[in-house]
Image (cartoon, rainbow, N blue to C red; front, side, top):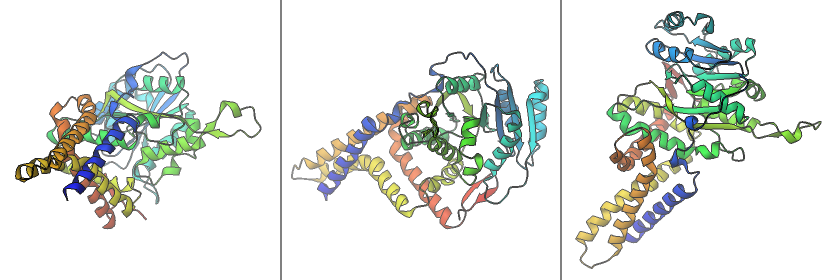
Length: 412
């Protein structure tokens, strides 16, 4: 029995060494929007599209930050009032009027949700359709709960233009104030980066694709090339679905532009972190964070029972085995009378695996300015996220689908 447990621990340790050394350096957090910036010579036209459903409380801050962007080019904001019941449109008009930005804001009353669309994407589709009349160079897709740094749009456009990118996205700094937010939100970012290593996402020769829906700048030509928002109209994880469509959709490469039948290359996308732009969406309780994860976790696994089983086993092996082996080895070494050094080796490898885990997690903890000791709590956090994933599958099997903003999206 002790040999089997030691074998599992050595496997877990090997996996962590592989993650740290060969898994896209995901833990380093070195892909950040604000690292470099070069002024643009020309300023493309940009239209922001903001789906808003019952966001009156946040708009005085978030919409204000969007209207006060320091971008010097042509910039218009199209806010889609998605059947709100709290006066969202009136609050938006008031914010624009107070800032003398009324001509820049266009409010669209959302139409009823048609079959086959998620609520957010239907709102985005309506905003893009109206904004397309201006023939902008880029669409800026952002959520109504995002407080933008004044330079956010300027930096996104500069990144897109200078590096010839089809899509640029940043994972904004999520709110991390309450106990549960400090415990679980940094881990959410950590797991996302492990699932989609940003370096791989940003490598045009790698198939990995992802985006963060709170702040996406996409070229109009790229959106038209993939067939518009309607190609992902049912996606619950819409940001990653859009990034995948853009990266797979490709673009006409330089070598093919003079050919009669140019061959498309892979689309170019970029995903990074932002230290300045932040989400104001509160997650003050375990329940709110649990619901956020459970809403889409099983979707991420393509509703596959086999992938679910693999995830449960994998999460246990990677995150739970090291601390369990450390404790078991310490207890067994005290009970054993034979002087078998296997127990000491079990404790040592368990401790090493736990420390490697904490080492990988520490940069994310530091990014969110949380206590360094929280890096050691990753096994317990991973256990909670594993339970959330299992609950996501249970909700799906019970026909509750992905619930959000009063809507439930069952999967057919």
